[in-house]
Length: 282
Image (tube, rainbow, N blue to C red; front, side):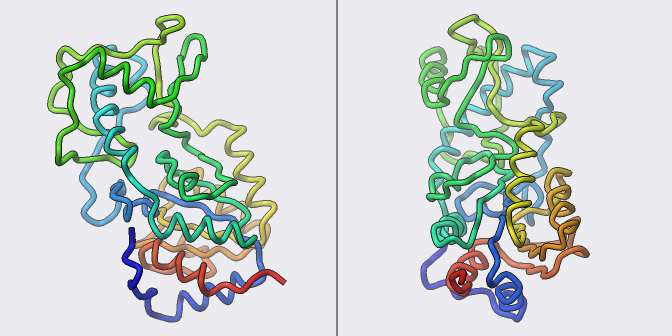
């Protein structure tokens, strides 16, 4: 977690954002940059390793691809599941509890907003907590599946210095001999309940995110470079309603020119400054 004595980011932009957001109920859109302080890397941040995530088409087309995916996904999930919410997650939960934040739309699949105490969370790209069968639709808890994977593959172990991806995946050294988990109901193909590269966000999930923005008076984007179109679309929805948009991200985003305030800084310290600086709603 962020050290408790870490000073809020300097500069006038944070205060400008607080002035803009004061008196408004805020919808929040978060990306991988919100979870970097929990030890989960960003896809595109400074120093991020170059990664080529598996696409939905690759996963569906090849048993070998699914074997490689499940080895890496299992190794990563064990490290992924050990991550803890950081100050940014906690700050958003506090802002929701105080009535200032109406909810969080997240592009992350790590579940850390819910574990921090946020109640209204739209997981736009799904969650690693669940796995489902592509044939019969049966849903499984990831913890139960992990036990089955380790029972079927007793040789597998999580390396000490695992290079974890934002999606909880790891690039394995080998997948030879790995027994791919199958549905225990129909023996069908299992898939984590996440949106793979090459897949679309489910229509009902995006509609839920749109409704959250529609019912709010401002939008804060935290820790996202807005490369994914679903995030850009939500910013556009806010702008069409003439809502102020505050973007907090290290480096440029696709919507910087459309932001009311852009803060080039880490998400945790800025969100904590919002939690301490925003006055209660009148």
